[in-house]
Image (cartoon, rainbow, N blue to C red; front, top):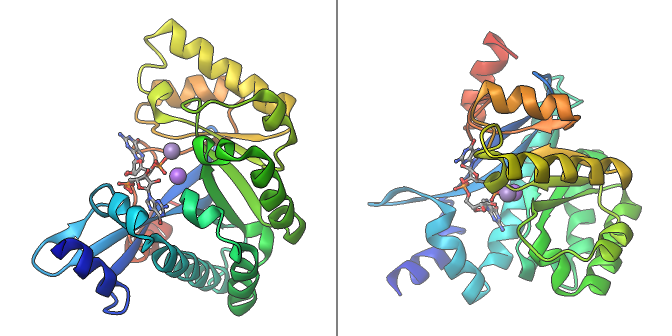
Length: 254
Ligand code: G
Ligand code: G
Ligand code: NA
Ligand code: MN
């Protein structure tokens, strides 16, 4: 309960932070963009992971103001990177189910990309497969509106939900993100290898870019690239980091 009280104040007290994890064009770059991942710098508790506070934020509805803060801050950061010359970079923001179905989502997105003057196609909204399939007809309608703006949609944690392929075909998404669970043992488990190659083939058939998350070894990197996976993300290539750390990487190896 104290946590809930503090979380309510975290936004106005400016205690939320975004870390950014790079996404690389397979096999080995360049960086195509970053996924924004929220953290809470709670006084006395250090940097809290979203695993600790997101469930509470969702249950209490605090995810709505928090999610709006995340979207705005990620777009602000992207506009800064664009001004620094990285116009090819995009940013991806995770949306919870409640956020995805809030009636004024599209209005808020328009507002924020206009405020920061970022090209709509440089913003990706990640929704999990489970969220997208909760109310598939509603999801199609929301994604249609976002796609009309030029914003991209990514189906996150793909393979862990219950997708109807009929709906997947109708969903105006531009990206499938293969869940980390299938990447872990990709190079040692034949079943995982088959599933991953089937997802990549499905993505190609449906004209979706395929992203693999949780890439931790060079063997996984090579395997995924050989199968035609478009984008790689994971600790091997880059951990979630602060904008300052990203600045250091730019001047050394990106
Ligand atoms: O960032 P990891 O570093 O710990 O993230 C843990 C989980 O929290 C992941 O499932 C991630 O998708 C989710 N997450 C991180 N940031 C956000 C956010 O801003 N909004 C939502 N809805 N989920 C997020
Ligand atoms: O998919 P989600 O949005 O659920 O993923 C974000 C979470 O994944 C964050 O907690 C991030 O720290 C974690 N993550 C990112 N790359 C890797 C990786 O290579 N290995 C593992 N185990 N976790 C990762
Ligand atoms: Na995600
Ligand atoms: Mn994921």
